[in-house]
Length: 91
Image (tube, rainbow, N blue to C red):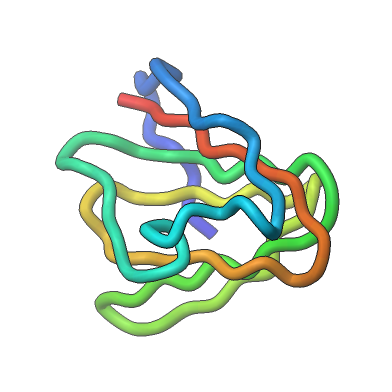
């Protein structure tokens, strides 16, 4: 999985989501803006993170394995049972 480039820093984050409160727009293809990276931080449980382009990659995320979202790359998430997570944004 990718890592953040040097020089980026956190500037915002979402609320904490559970399996029942994941917004629909995170469950289907979406992307960050140009220059915006994100980290999917799992507090409890597991989450499937799917990168949709240029090829499909699936990752299982858990508290010790966050997800890194590259700018403008289409992706989606799926709860794998009970989960609590948030998304932190970097630029």
